[in-house]
Image (cartoon, rainbow, N blue to C red):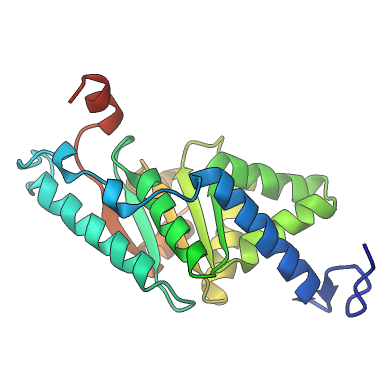
Length: 229
């Protein structure tokens, strides 16, 4: 392919990403998201009847009522997504719909023409690590996407192998996106206390101060489905 006349093929003009690399990022993101969700995840498939109409003994709140509110927050976030959208912090046990609702938001935002990057934590850190220690064109593009996309969704934070590199990389990524005003959704099975222990007080503070917490309660949906409920 012909070398870009603006940046000479480097992808950057000074420290600013060139349009050619930004376009490439967008194409890659569209491909990735089509693979991820089959672009079919929709809020209408989310079934509140899987969540008990009962009080959660630990939280003292009605589980289905909390999940109805969570569904409403996610639906409105997707419908009104813009470059000024807030950051969301999905927290709750495994199998409660965090990944599914993230996919619904990702699909809706992509259909509205926004660039969305969806990564599991382990894949995200693998990309950042490769670019840090063994960079090539592909890894530079992958990391540019993580910083530049309109919405970055990090799924299952806390399931990756955590070390000093991942802690520093996570802080850098979150900070960079907050500074540039770009939206993020982070989902995790960890509590905020766990986040502070596992990563750092600085990361926990960023997540507490700059993200809206969205609670997920109930019993593992996959287990319920396997029981034929």
